[in-house]
Length: 288
Ligand SMILES: O=C(O)CCC(=O)C(=O)O
Image (tube, rainbow, N blue to C red; front, side):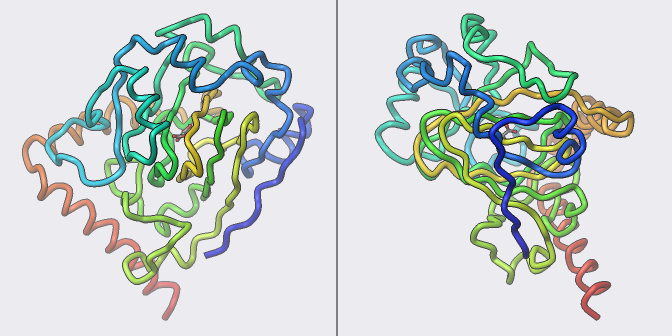
């Protein structure tokens, strides 16, 4: 497995971004957020003040109920209590894809839309929170959007692979994830041998830095310290990606939910077996 470094730039002109990065590779913008009020204002305490009274869904990496609905939350909690929890030390409970702006639209005044491309879904900026050591398993985003993820407070390690690595990262069918135990930073090549042949990127983002994740790219994240991130997303820019997004959002979860309700654990085992088998077939083709 090869992990290249992600380029780091202060800012970019749209033309430079389109020529060198759009749909090609990730990049970290170190200066994009420096004029935003959020750069100075956003902290865990600020978020507690703005949305603390709401109840929020919480997600976990690891075993889940095979009969639960697609992307169902593990539990929920008052947001102010959750912030206290993550400040106390490691927990595997994470806030994922929270449209906090629906909870408090004032937050919209705290940041701007990136100006390097068009097509941003301005009503869907989402927030992610986690404690030190929280792990977000390898996945790509259902809607195939281009993601601009700005980190606040702590730092985060991110590993990314292009969609050409679907087999090497063991994509589980009828999902947009790999195995939750697959960790590209601590690879278990005995269990996931095809991962040896993946080539991707890795980086760490700190407060105020913005990582561009191209449409459909795999990403796994580890919180190196307690913190949170804001993702702004621009719509997939080709018809094939838009079609895939419509399938991922509208069709795939429906099929998955029916299969989970009827077959539960055996459906999950079948999907895992299929992903491992695809990895083995790839190895047989490439290593003989
Ligand atoms: O930072 C996180 O917790 C996850 C971010 C993520 O997966 C995303 O923005 O697509």
